[in-house]
Image (cartoon, rainbow, N blue to C red; front, side, top):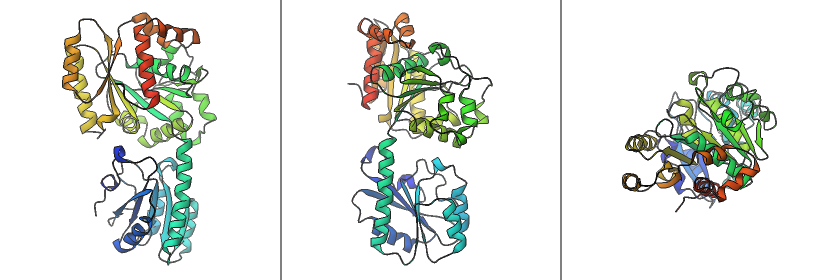
Length: 395
């Protein structure tokens, strides 16, 4: 059997929202086939089998995305499997139902510490298994209904294209016009400027949030996110100490992203131009990636290179990528046509060149929202925000 769950579960773009993904894993195939045949009687799930090779203790090792439910058959090296799962942060563990061939006090004690959703001991009837799986998936769906925040990441194709300005303007529009509880996150660790743009004084920044993430909850997280407006908060890359990429693990970044998504309706992230361990974590999780470029041949070349990298290296679907041509000038129609020809399947949005309107888009008073009626650039920003808020593409 193929050990990669990504080929066993449905691709993300083919998943139906009401369907849950189940991974069935263990050391030997026959009991796994019985489990799969049983859950196949449920009409709203998709399941895949993953055989664990000898020497591999973590059944979730190497997965790009987690299943909604891990159905775990414990036999050989069962204790090391449970201990390996226990080493994972809670946000990187799916719901788990374990099946044991026979009672084992040591395994039951370890499983209890993991707070597994259910521990079943053979013989297990199909009826019992289906009942427990259904109850667990009901809880998964209930949580998903409360944790449906969207994540949009902005990244420059070439330095200075304006991703920071656009991300701040979009976050402000989502908060003010669409009444979304929005968090704006600056991930440019070396030269992040969003705190300056928004005029917010930052006491604690991204570094402190990552260092404390295991102790944070939705309430204490607010200490790291000064309020910009009624529905808008900022988590800044700037803080009392410099943060370097190699000082942060991807697990901590995953934990922080999960907490931010639980604490908002929309998470807007301004990324640095280079792709590294931390930015790839964001890019892989983002619902929408907005690549910002200007109307020059150099920007187009860099933009094509970046988009190809997203698709080829990070396996990001084309449907998740949007292109924003910033500071559009009259008379640049030929280059816009070239962009459309080079990237024919991407949604392309144009933002007119208007420096003063750009500064106004970053201001966070309600009075500035009226500017959208008088500026082509501000109207374009609000149209882009409307598309992002609705989770659809612009025509």
